[in-house]
Amino acid sequence: MEFGPGSAAHLVRLEARSGALSGPTANLAPGFVQANLAILPRALAYDFLLFCQRNPKPCPLIGVSDAGAPIIEALGHDLDIRTDVPRYRVWENGKLVGEPENITDIWCDDLVTFAIGCSFSFEEALLASNVPVRHIEDDTNVPMYRTSIETVPAGVFSGPLVVSMRPMKPQDAIKAVQITSRFPSVHGAPVHIGNPAAIGIADIAKPEYGDAVRIQEGEVPVFWACGVTPQAAIARVAPAFSITHAPGHMLVTDLVNANLSI
Amino acid sequence: MEFGPGSAAHLVRLEARSGALSGPTANLAPGFVQANLAILPRALAYDFLLFCQRNPKPCPLIGVSDAGAPIIEALGHDLDIRTDVPRYRVWENGKLVGEPENITDIWCDDLVTFAIGCSFSFEEALLASNVPVRHIEDDTNVPMYRTSIETVPAGVFSGPLVVSMRPMKPQDAIKAVQITSRFPSVHGAPVHIGNPAAIGIADIAKPEYGDAVRIQEGEVPVFWACGVTPQAAIARVAPAFSITHAPGHMLVTDLVNANLSI
Image 1: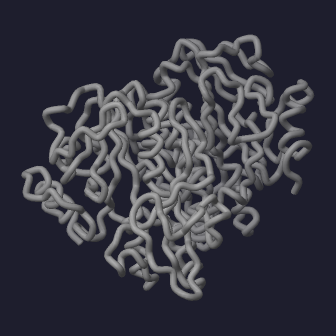
Image 2: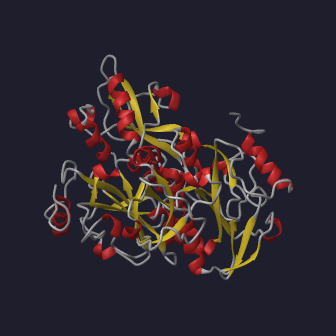
Image 3: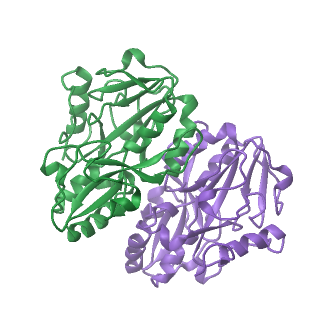
């Protein structure tokens, strides 16, 4: 695995920057950490930072920019927040108003960028330990559900915990607890195993986000805190202006998945 | 171990509140998490929260209050930040101006309280695994050193990483890496093992804080990020007004050390 200038991660960013890449980033630059982005006005940044501090499982921050700075030094060499994600979403008062490939023309010095760890990192570790991940086998989106578990509110931000679900054989579920426990900065250990109703999920076949997956005889559903949680908390607030990545179109960082393991 | 109202942790807080306890909290309420406190004006809170996010090893936040709130719900039932620490330090423009036993009369709605994990938690885990801790054996303060490692700055906060040091036999040092890696919310794995000069420590016999300890034949010094780091960063800024706990006089929380392990 090559690091630094010219690394696979850097090349993905350069392709997004040039416009050559405008699609999803799954399976690109294997081994490198991909991040969810939330870009908020400075006036909301303190509350959001506190929300992430109080809810580290759904909101594992891996980097925060200075206000107005289009870089996050911790995340990479030659990284430009305005151009290096293949596709963004622009929100006004809670409404999606655009899905541009860069945000150079709407960037302003009032914006703070939050990069949040994503499950791609721990899924890579699961696959490396021969723990099958159903939605990857089936090439669909992971199923995600609103739960009856409330996040800890912070200022204007609040809302239910959203979880992702991966069905597994019990032996694999045990391995998955061990493996993902070592990745606290990308959601960490599961929040629940087994009965969906115990966390307020009425119908496991009907996820609120993503796609339903097959649950086979003898498998148990395993639930992890999900990065959609902070997105849903932001959507509730409906800021006058905010920007996120488009789903699946992540920021590919110079951090290495294996180094997140503790 | 008893939890909730009437627990050993709660009783320590009630003793501090009544004035019956004004001394250090080491060895009180074994098993419960003790926290460093930094109480800052709201205007500095965002920069400090960001400093902690960017420097999680020296600044492992375990709770942050709402502005003006004398409670941190995550840390305990019946917990009053203004009275439940046995002794505080009050700072004005970087100068120590008082060491009161409560801060009720100087409390104001502009203050935000940051509770930061402390090494007592992982030392308990080391002792439980029969890893001797020299300064505890010798009943002195842990030796602490400024290093040549810079923290990642955030807003007005910056400064060198301060580390604590525990000399150990190599086999114990290995166990200590394993054990403390499982406690990321109380400084986590060591930042360095061996040669003090490699991290800018000129004389291991002359700590900047705490007391020097014996290093025996065949032992290696093991260095952990230390909670004095954020205190030193605050001291550099010399806020017009701030409050900390007095050294060794910690906030005893309802969190349980064993539950911090991942």
